[in-house]
Length: 222
Image 1 (cartoon, rainbow, N blue to C red):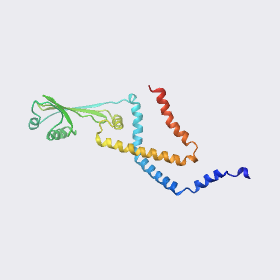
Image 2 (tube, helix red, strand yellow; image 1 turned 135 degrees about the horizontal axis):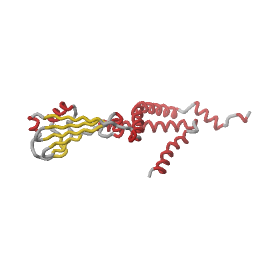
Image 3 (cartoon, rainbow, N blue to C red; image 1 turned 60 degrees about the vertical axis):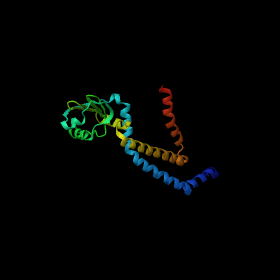
Image 4 (spheres, rainbow, N blue to C red; image 1 turned 30 degrees about the horizontal axis):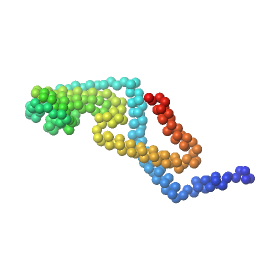
């Protein structure tokens, strides 16, 4: 019966798997815990970035139908006086009282937005995810022109993917989300290492995931 008896090395491996050391059990528990927590935090974000990665990659095939809204309003005389003068300034916001009035009249938040002050005009560029907007104020007459363009939900999500014109809060979210993805990936790699002895295809598949984009980049990207 010796020919069917397991080798000493195999018996030792089986005994080790059946009775893992306390050190190994501790790290397995920790890695599993951090892996599932980070995966739960990343799940929706990863789906969002994966889907928008496809839409960005095929942006030329996805037609957008921009919708443009143009409005004109007249500043009250007291607010016109707050903008009077022939001085030129760059990168200076509107007075808060003017910004608040325009926000109520046009339904747009411009508090703290910096504008270019010319002798006869104040111009504010108001880019946003999925669209664009601008506002122009005639300093002499108080005439305000506002134009807003919306390019749809696909463009909106694409701009969120790129962090374009999304503000500092979204930039912080991307940083925190990226950190959670790093934790998810590193704990996954360590779990693969700890289970690789029972899964022979582990490292060949990891190597394939590394080599495939590398080879494609070297051959097809110049």
